[in-house]
Length: 145
Image (cartoon, rainbow, N blue to C red; front, side, top):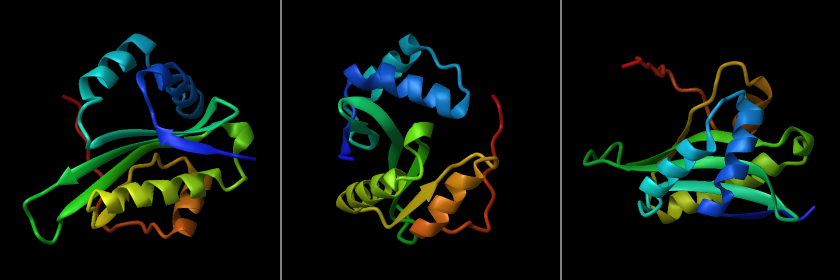
């Protein structure tokens, strides 16, 4: 199976949202997604990566590059909405996508990649651990505002 990975364009947004709505039981509207995509498309530190087979989006990840003025932290990335269409899982597609992401992050000068994943995604967590991600001691805190 030939998978093409590339940075998404506005034309991919509907397929990305359909995939993420399927994988994460989200309810994001296409209009909202296109609005945000257009607001961030010229920021080189906001990257939406897709994987496609025969022109169909079957994988996605959002990469956010964060540059800091702190030497120990340096530049790092946060990955979220990492997903593969259910019928394409178990074919190492996520691993191949993580390889592409790591290459992009290295090119951007990242010292570290961090990944945000919901606690219930046990199979995804196994993939991340196999790729070399470790669970940090720090917790991810959030507050609705």
